Amino acid sequence: MRATIRGFALVTLLYAATPRALRGQATPVKVDSSWMAVRAADSTVEFQLTAALTSDNGGMNFNGAARGALTLTVPVKWHVTLHFTNEDDNMPHSVEVTLAQKPLTATSGKPAFPRAESKHAAQGVNAGAKEDVRFTANQAGSYLIVCAVPGHEAAGMWIRLSVSATATRPWLQAVPAAP
Figure 1 (cartoon, rainbow, N blue to C red):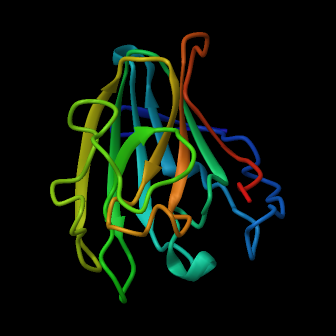
Figure 2: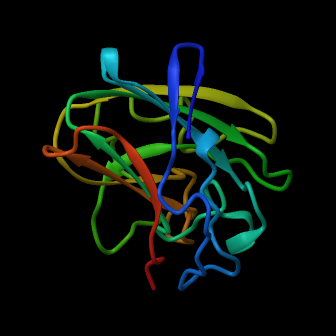
């Protein structure tokens, strides 16, 4: 399936039609094709990133996924825009791209790429707030998209970002959650 919105091609995503039950998830993550728009002509991907989209993990999730149960893969050197929205009526949230490391920290470190964090990452923003986070994924590797409010990453509020030297297009997939 392919549609175009504002010059971006919406691409069919892996597992979009058949959600899977994931270890560590109360309900299956349902990948929605509207979450990602790709414009190959200028190597750009836009991703709708919603904090507390569902009540899974006590609302400590992005797009309903917690503990890495969702992976966004982008080719190296692509431009990424995270359209971040906080839907949690109970607490502030933020977004930051960090290096994937174990153990997870109670507070995040510096962003893995220049400008790969929301403006008030440690404080977060309240319900209904929106912010665009734009960066270039200029180094191949494994990263996490985390909530940088202290304690939220350690509570499981993170998904994966893979920057691939071999990928030719971005994709999004549901994966088993980390224990």
